Figure 1 (cartoon, helix red, strand yellow):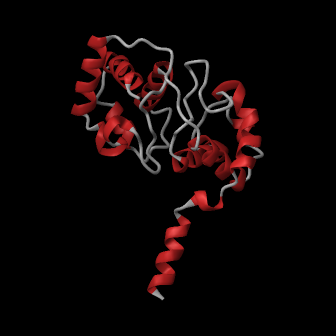
Figure 2 (tube, rainbow, N blue to C red):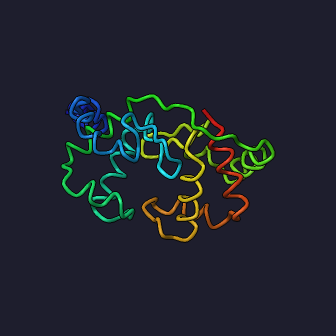
Length: 189
């Protein structure tokens, strides 16, 4: 009985076993205009989805669909997605390789950003190299414009689908810290 329960719980947390990457790729065609066909956007205001954790991507799509996260351009895109569609999309983008972004980080800002990231314990949730885990996003290599937008949204409490963690951290950082963190995060592979 314990083994059956344990296996059931294990499979509940392994969405890749049920995802259809080909279906995800087909659905991703609509995402390509902003995020790039492979999850690597050409425009810095959009996040890099390639290599993101599937669990995080799925939860963000769900939050957009259910109104817990607001981005006007996303609402019509997720409105008709089923849970299976969201799972397939999440697994498809998670399976893609992130490409280096076209951004030259300022070395002094990178150093200050790393110091601030260490101070506010970014690696406690985002792990070493800010590579992400489960529902915690991979922020390494994100576009600086996107990083700045999200940190400002957490600080202003206009983005609150984080269970309070990022909202709390964002209250402790300044505008300069946000810029420095963006340089640091964007400089990571």
